[in-house]
Length: 285
View (tube, rainbow, N blue to C red):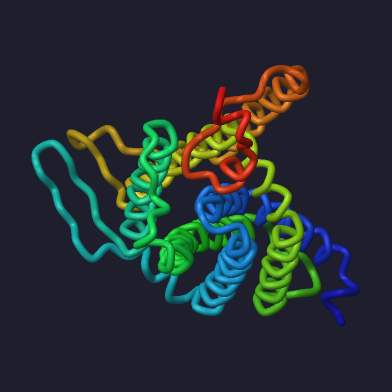
């Protein structure tokens, strides 16, 4: 009750909630792309599972924040002629997540543009399980990066009067729950919009490539990688990345608005929603 009556706590809650929603955009994009290849009745289930997993991973990591912060300690140092650094648990998780995100994004672009169908009869029964596994793997990385960012923000800010570390933990958990509830509400419409517009799909996958590169730079920075003993790898500020994402989406929304009554856009492969809208006349043309 003391926390609820503290105006500083409400400001912190709103700030962290907004931060979690912004950091969850990449999660929503990945969920939309992965769930878009499932049967239409399985798509809401995959999105719910994905977002609930994201919430669970974030809360678990918050309760194990001491363990998370201990992963910054290097367990393997190297100093070769052209590169040096120290590999830590944090750098390994973030760097590995960046590699996986790059691989998955490029693979999805290839399948959609080159026309390779994945929804075969042999894979149909395991498609939901496969999607959940992919979502879970990426959620671990996204949750790890989100918690590190949130903890860094809280640590950098002066402690508000009236609540200590325990109160800060409760506020971060509340922010995570609120942000996930908001994303659950809007996940369906966002996924439908993404899967109905091919350019948005490709833009979303391009954003995931950018985020993958950001994670690679972040992992290298956490490992204090230096080339030739002088040039250190720096992390990419998230503000630049998300500005590019929002600006690109704004331009594309303008394009969609202007071309609303123009000819039908090209249909990408492996999109259940897009495929279901093809009529016999479309196929004849």
